[in-house]
Length: 588
Image 1 (cartoon, one colour):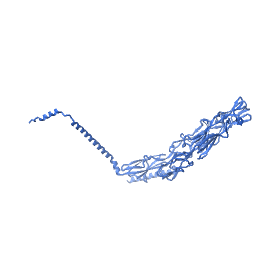
Image 2: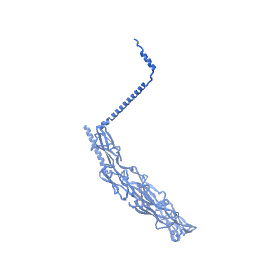
Image 3: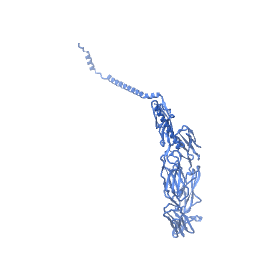
Image 4: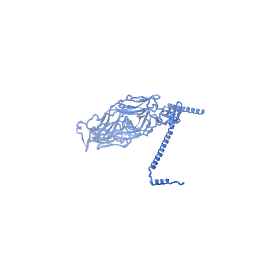
């Protein structure tokens, strides 16, 4: 008996030492979750005057859980493991709600809220010009976007017909509605007569925002282009009243195409056509210059291997005086590599914490046409554009903030570098994608309450087995606390009438701890007696029913046979013979 007590004491002592060591390790390594609450969703995107609902849940016992917000605040509750922040008509642009918990200390997690508003109107116009355009001259289009928010998520797209020409983004960080405008330079040619230009305002709000992104498009702008006709070296001007108003083109040459988009080291060919008789036509360029000629109405600038980033070719003509038209040249280069990484972190991520992803794009040009797109799986999360005006290759980085949850375990993030070079560029736009970044998410524990009820009845003499299962990553350690000194490390626990009134299942991993209290209800002897004699009582009841059934069967058979005997046939002759036999004297 003494040896057994000593063994039990040693077992309890070593259990306490191990349990304390685990707690100390978690504390010293600082891997415990900063605040044991989880928001779902983790970012709210709400239309102005729309409704919003976000849940805040916890898996740990607490002294209070609540929401603080200038609209929809939720008072602190002690008896709930989840509370919801709700606003049916959100109108505060700068709202900053947060969920707080009184645990070992009070802490809070803020909810990022983006309130958006689609523009009241989108319109397109020509800056400082009315009437027909002149072939070869440059004009400026303007797109006006009225009362839109937030502007940093706004993209203005320019179209000619169904062709995307360019995109304009905005870097201002303003939450309230503003008016914005974007501009586009065009140089129409004779083929553009009757062309329709339009601009489109789109709010790209990320994965939590509406899909597809909300957009509003201007009415189309129809343009009329006046151009020159050449026939046998005689120039006739199709200008109607233009000749009187002085709107003739400044230099009578036409470039085709009007803008060159060339891959670095690739070839290029652009025609320059004169629309009037001339004394000389030529190309001036640091590569591919064409000497002046008098006997041609069209000459071509050609380079088979273009490597000069800042080339500025122009076509010139000697007419009444010498004039020239410059050719805009965009030389592009695919990035050598695109890679994705986590900034200042390695290993698994912790649920609910914020991390920064970085996309590195090496040796790309021109950067002002670069867009970095962020994906989780096949879902587009965000886009990053660049405003630097650099023609030569550069290295660029873009970043994205994420706050993973348990559903993100095994998720693949990637970034994609795309060069959107306009209608003259390659279609579809050239792009290069990083290798996927697989993330592992450590998350807080949730004990399966279906398998472990909060109250368990125990009948005397009949032990019960409790099962404690917990979901968590990394795999949790399960322990039971009985009273103040006994700790059992196992997923199951057998309890009986000698078990303390309160039993605690504790689940631990490097992220945190979850605890569930089980109240043990000992049932009295009457319950045991009733439980014990239920089979006997049922057996007696069945036996009585069977006996009664047998008796009724025998009575039924007897009555049936008796009735047949009483109602049989009576033979008169046989009866008289029987009487005569009885009347004869008996011999002595």
